[in-house]
Image (tube, rainbow, N blue to C red; front, side, top):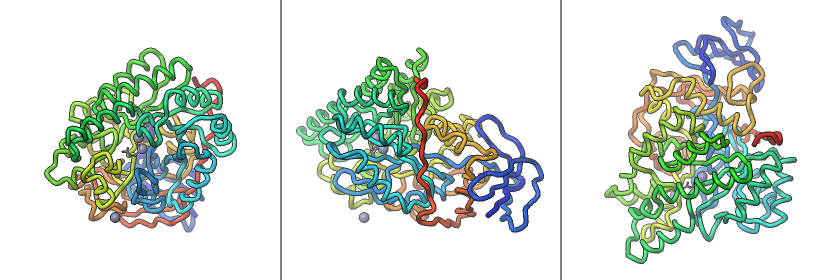
Length: 463
Ligand code: URP
Ligand code: ZN
Ligand code: ZN
Ligand code: ZN
C-alpha cells in the first residue's frame, strides 16, 4: 500500500519546506520535491495545504469506569473521532483501583483497547502503594513499554495518591527510567470545600468551581515539583489550568528543574461562565477537573505554550452523556467529571493559536505532536515527517472552515464543549499507519487497526 502526498508544505517542529511525502506500508519512505508516483499509489493532492505529523493527544480516557459510570466513548469511537480531527495517537490511562494489581489493570485496558482505530499507548496510574506495586512498575517498564506513571493528587476516597505513594512512586520511576506525571489538585482541600458547600446548602453545579479554586491546583503543583526536586526526578503536570500552576512550573524550570506542563484545548478557550449558565444540564456538561477558569488564566496558558513552559496540548477526552451527568443534579460532587475534545483539539488550537499569531505553524506542530513524542520517548517514530517515521500524517487546509457541533461530531456523549465555534484551519486528510482513514469529511475508521505503542524507558541520565 503506497500513498503519495503531493504538492504540500511539510511543517515539522524545526522547519517548514515544500515536499512530497511517500508512504509505503506503515512508514514514510521518501520526503522530497517532485517525487514520482509509484504504480498503484494513492495520490493525495495537498496543493495549498500543510502536511504535518499526526496529532498526539497525551491525555484521554476512553471507556473509563469513573464516578459510578463508564465514559460514553470507547476505544473505537474515541480513536475514530481523533482520526477525524487529525489525531493519530492517543495516550490513555490505566487506572487500577486501590489494592488492585497494576498488571491486572493493564491487561484489562489492553483488552478494551484492542478495538482502537488509531494508535494508543498507556500511562499507568499508581493509586496505592506496597511492595507488589514497586515490583509491577518494573515489569510494566521492562516488559510492556510503559515509561510514564500517573498520580492523582485529587479524588480523595477513590484514586488519590497520598504523599507516601507520591514519594515512593517517583523514586521508583527514576530507578526505572520512567517519568512521573501528576493530576495536581489538593484532594483534601477539594473534599473539605465540597463538604462545606454542601453543608451550606450549595448543592448545584455552580459549586463545582468554588470547590476547586486555582490555589488548590497550585498547592499540588508546587508539592509535586518540590518532591521531584528533592528526589531528582523529572515531573510532567497534566492539565495545567491556571496561572498559579504555570508560575510554579516556570519558577522550577528557571532554576534548572526538568518540569513539563500540559494544557488542554478546553482550558485554552472556554471560561468559567459555563458553570453559571441558566440551563444546569449545559453547566453540568462542562464539569471537569480542574474546572474551566477565567480569561486571565487562558491568557497565561497561551503565554506558557508560546514561551516554552507548557509543552503539550491534550484534551482529557472523557465524555459522559446528559443522563450520566444528571447523577449529580442534586449534589455537584456526584457529577461525573469529564469533557470531550479529541476530535476538535487540533482545529481549536490552530484557530485560537495560529490564526491569532500566538503560535507559528511549527510551534503548533511542537505542541500538538513533537513535544509529546519527545517527552514520552517515541520520537522520531512519531512527531515528525521524515524517512523512517510512522506514516501518521495530517493534511491541513489553513483556509478550510468548519462549525463545530455535537450534531456532526463522531464522538459519543451528545455534547460538544466547543459547540458553535467556527474554526479556520481543518484537516482534509488523515493518514494513520500509512492508511488514508479520513478524506474530506469521510471517516474510514476500522476497529482494531490501531496498535499498542510501546515506549522504551529513558536512560538513567534523564534526571
Ligand atoms: O474531570 C476530569 N478531568 N476527568 C477525567 C479524570 C481526570 O482527572 O483527568
Ligand atoms: Zn485529571
Ligand atoms: Zn484525565
Ligand atoms: Zn446516555
